[in-house]
Image (tube, one colour):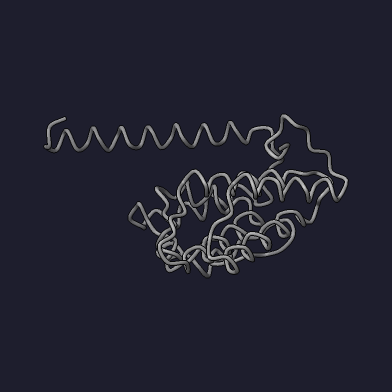
Length: 199
């Protein structure tokens, strides 16, 4: 593609299309999950308030812009600063990315703690696939219907942060899934072998 105005516009349209495709794929993947505990109108307001930010934006920039904004969830009220890591390593490509993160507050708050613990480590790359695996494990724990207070998310989050702080390294994603599966089995929650946690 030529490096002129029309070439740059075509690249921008292509990037936007790919982002929409990723968002749709993410929503389809989550299609069978329960509704998020935050009202859709409130999430849309947050997304609209973030339109003024230049993307990609870091977690630090998002918190600086909207950190004091309150979000009413089913169980309690959070601020955006409680859900988004104040770290330059955490980036968002659009307001929709922030919306997706905020709509599951117990997972978002736990991931914030994990990302900030990792951010304090020297020379550690918290790559996309490992970060995604951690978040998917927490999402699976949150989706356990019998665990209304998301105890599994907190337990595995505490375990992860403790490992990061004590060892100065990141546990492998399989170790995290094993810990989550152990929590489920210890508490009488069914985990099938063909599920994400069934290792």
